[in-house]
Length: 168
View 1: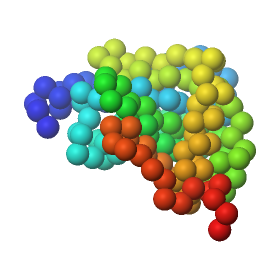
View 2 (view 1 turned 90 degrees about the horizontal axis):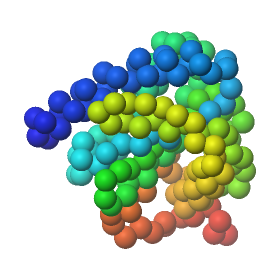
View 3 (view 1 turned 120 degrees about the vertical axis):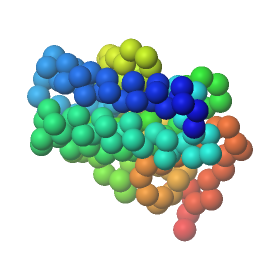
């Protein structure tokens, strides 16, 4: 990876703990939320998107646990798109999540976008709660019983070999 990419990744990574701490100072307790990471493709390794996103998720989870040791986190999915940005979803304190039913029963929970750019910020995005819940249910259906996190790379032709909705 280029030196400039590595420096930018490190710069972004170093902002995550403060951003997460400030966010939780202004939210209520241990309510279920979904963090939608918005990450620039320019700082990702195109040969393995998941490996290149995982350190950001780990830093988010570590920061959450530093602030709220009892927080439950779950790295659900990665959506890679052509162009400038890709996304990942991390649930926090979603005790109602059941992997086996997530393709059918995925009620919306509050979504907060964590924009991972030169100036990391997190903000509520109420209008996408339902859309993100539906997208995750579709990914759970398409990926069958694949382990989390589920990964869809829209740069390539996508197909699902064992969708849950197919009769066995």
